[in-house]
Length: 240
Length: 270
Image (cartoon, rainbow over all chains, first blue to last red; front, side, top):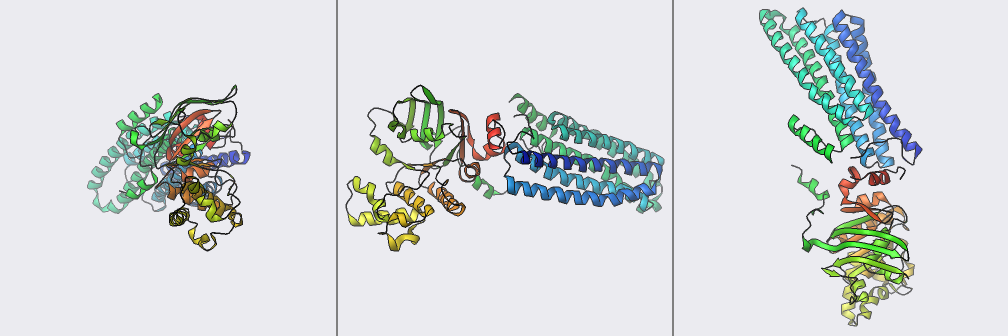
């Protein structure tokens, strides 16, 4: 598989269109990153205004998704992209959908504060903040891999999601133990569980984006396969 | 789960094509015009009853390669051919090959429609008459069938004896294709068959090409990459007389293996 160069088309306008499309998805990614950062800070500092800001900003993410989709449709209709250009447009189209969903997941965390359903225990709260920071790191690396079209990095990040899944499981066990102590707070706990789950889902969505990066760069669809199979296929690609 | 998706995939694989499914086997084909090499050691097996496109920039040798399959290049002085082109296991460059017979088996259609300045009917029966067929009923039946095959029958059945030059460009091109298939060839060579036509006539011809593959092996040279992507099962990309990549059209247009193919189909600097 060849190296992907976006700006070498004979048509300068097409170069610009693809470059703008890629920049738009990175801008959207940057905004999701900021949203996650704000949601975690709001949770940590019990900062209601920041949580409200996260909820308001989610509308911007929604409209970004619509605009990027429109641009993808226009490019497909007018430019008939082929090979790596086609894969770029498809990967961006799917990445945008995942970024928008990440926005919804993050909104769920901010909603905890708005509804006054903050974690009852400090341990859970600290656990959520630690997981949140981990997810934020994963998102940052994913967006970097997208910007650099780096399939190797995408694979590494993909593998790293296991740690977040582990953290989530531990947090869940802890929450169940605490919930049993005081069943009156169950409705509040349910909100907390949803938010924990949302955090873990952001990690899963980063993993999806990594799969799109691998598809874009290597031309192979690696969705819904085991880690071992994924490693095996990529090793094959490196050799070819 | 979605069996109907298989409809858009070629039914054969180039990697292990059984001998009986090979229409043309090109082995080490090199062609020179005087001292200039136009084709360099081309090796490819073209599957039967499939549509294969030849694409590449101007001067890459795609029309020259097409011309090798019915020995059209013989007409160019100083043309030398090395290697073999096997059709039904026989090398068409063998010295005992009857070239006139070969050209009935391998029909050709050019960029500009070139009907003879005679009636629609006479255009069609011209080749049959040369073959000595005179029976009126046989000729009539052949004309009707050929015109049905190219979806022109309904449009011209009431004016078969009008001059072919009264037809539109798209109709003339379909007539010329009918003139080739009336001789019941095995292979049809189309050299940029739609580049002189408007978009609607182009789509009609593309649809016709798709129908023709039921009976014939079709090879199309085209400058229009989207056309190759739309109509063909297999695509060969040529560059400066070399066969750079030859594969399933779906693969070639989504994940080509060669850098040069990628650059050409995505419109990048070569």
